[in-house]
Structures are given as structure tokens and as C-alpha cells.
Length: 421
Image (cartoon, rainbow, N blue to C red; front, side, top):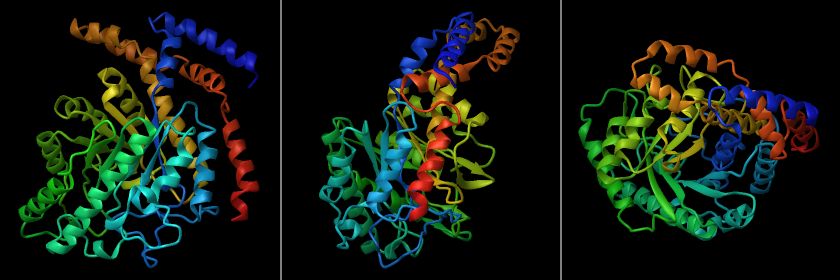
């Protein structure tokens, strides 16, 4: 599209939104201040670079597909990340897993990792990223082969994973200190039973005790924030998950930790947009892992569906965006991985923009007056307002491609770079 056409469409959209009392300039300025944490593991199908004797992906998760061009090295992964970020408006964050350490070719076990193993990531990210977030890797390791980590019956194995968790919090703190803003270090463990357990309590007691030990060392919250994440089930762990939603909701509230809501970690009829307002009442802050479950926790690429729009609107309506950390979490190996990143990030930003362009104060007043008819009418009219013209203008103002042009860029990158791997 020509610049003049984009500007003309934006001016018309600006007038239409103004008729509803919405200032589009304020909306895009607010959007520019919201960072999204882009997950590194989309680029190489959750492989990582620690090389633990060739262990395959485990822990109830699975990346499907064999699209060519997967990043094989840290350098390739970083190049792909830079390419994706160049197509996304705004300045954003990167979410790293512990298995992506830069070990210089020397095996370092997970309870021995240190900030120095991620220093090259920090140095690389400065100037490119707003910040970085971190995750312990409690899967794809010989000591997680039984399906249990922090809740394992073996005290020695539990201790190994406690040490890993403590090490990761220190790494998160080092990242946050150097970037000048806190890293969110998110704890998720795959611990589960494939079939019906006799004792549901003991594993949860062990998990609680292990988590308390992980979080015992005091770390400056200006550098690192602790989050805990639940899951409904995983492949090979369908009947019982130790870290259920109820477990972690209670743990986060009682310990005042961040609670992580992953869009794929609940029953098929549950949505995280419904949970945001409740969690923010009782937890200090909230971490979102935005994904797209299709029938199960399948981690499909985020699209601009009803639930994503509901998440964006609810975050804006809450008035508590400063207490919410937004990250993406999916890994689709069946399509171009740079395109997968770019689509998901742009769609999350679109959903937030739609929320920012909503006349929430007007809608709230109608609701308080119990004028549900006008509320419903307004909801329907808002659906056809030209938010896309505002989005195009925002992309242009940030110097990134408008419309399908970003995909042409990805196609060229695939031809020039990915196809040669």
C-alpha cells in the first residue's frame, strides 16, 4: 500500500473512532509501550543447545512437523529472531529456556548452569530487546525420564531439580540487572501420572516443599520475578498432573508469586480471558503464555480468533497492564518458523490494539445503568469499525511492513537463508 493511502484510511478511521469517544493517537502510543516476550523455542522446535546425550523432547510436550530451515545453532537462532523482530512493530522481549545456554561446546548439567552461560545472550540482546525472561527446563533430561522432577519420590532427584530452579532464578536476576528491568522466571514442571493414582496428596506435598526450597534464596524483585505455571495434562501424563491449576492458584496466592495462565493448559471449554480479572485480585502480578490449543494443548500458532481478542480486551479493561507480563508459547514445526513468530506477535499486538480502541468507559457506564440493550448494540457496532486501518498506520509509523508485505520479506529470507541449512 502507498503511504498516502495508509494515511488517508487512518484519518477516516480516526474520525469513526472519535464518534465513539476513542482517541486513536492515544491508543497507538499506549500500544507502543507494551512489550511482548517472544519465545525462543519456536525457532528450533524446543531443541535447545545443551546436547544431553541426544535426549528427545519429553515431558508431555511435542513439536510436530518437519518444515525445512530449523535453526541448528545459537547463531542461526539469533539471526532468525532478529529477522522476526524486524517485522514486528515496537520493542519487545525474548523468552529463553535454560536448555538454550551457550556452553561453548562443553556439557554443563542443569544444576550447574550459571549466569555466565547466558552472558552472550545478554550481550547480544542489548540494544535489540527491551528485556529478557527465563524458564527452568524441567523436561528432556535423564533425571526427568520417570515423569517426575520436583515431586519425584527420590529425594536426590528432587534436590537436583531444586538446585536447577535456584540456579535459574540467579540467571534471571543477572539478566534483569543487566537490562535494567526484571526478568520473569517461570517454573513449569511436567510431573504427572499416565494412569489413575492412589495417592494424589503426597506428590503435591513434595512439590510444595521443593518449590519453597527453590524460592527460599532472597532475590531482588527489581531484577527477577518468580512465576508458577499449571497444566491440565500432557502426553503420557493424562490422568493426574501434580501442578494443577488449583495447586498453583493456592501456591501463588499464599506465597505471593506471579501466576502463569497458559491458554492451552485448561479444559477445552475454559478460557484464560475469563480468569485474568480474578487472578489480579489476589496475585501481585500475572504472566500470560498465549497459545492456541486445538482440541488439546497443541500449541498452534496464535491467530486473531475470538479468544485472543477477548484476552486483549480484558487486559486493557483491567486497567492493570502494568501488572501483566505477556509472553507467547507455541511451537509449530509444520510451517516457516520465522513466519510463525511474526504472525503470533503481530496478532497479539492487534488484539491489544482492538482493546485499546474500545470505549470502555462508555460501556461500563451503560452496564452500571443496567442498559444492557445499548451495551449489546455498541458491542456489535464496534466489531465493524476500521481498527485495521489504525493497525496499518501503526506499522508504517514504526517502520515495519504493512499488510502481506512482511510475508514477502519472510519468503525472501527463506530463499536466501533458511533453504541453505
